[in-house]
Length: 123
Image 1: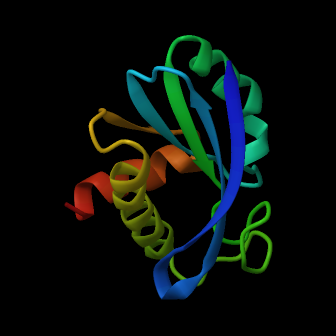
Image 2: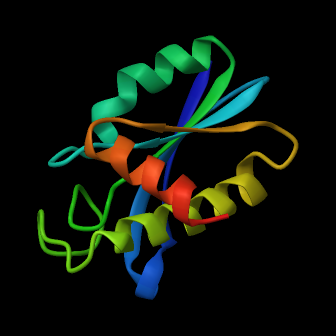
């Protein structure tokens, strides 16, 4: 059975980022999803519930300027802000939700680019 929670994380330059977490009873790993352009975290509800049934806990955040996160819709001053947000959010997720579990980063479309660039430019 899955439980969904909503919360706020403060990203780069203290930007308010909304996220959803779908927890399951005995997770074997955590999947952190970065969505694509003009999407938001709720778009991944069905996938999150499917992954919960396979014992993966799922976290999806709204990029700045998307969904319920702070920022003008679809506007970003510098692309690297997305990467800074993901790097700090991934550290937060590992510490708070996945300390003893593997943390997998999953990016869709523009989220895939953000994920790849973050992995190349952040430790």
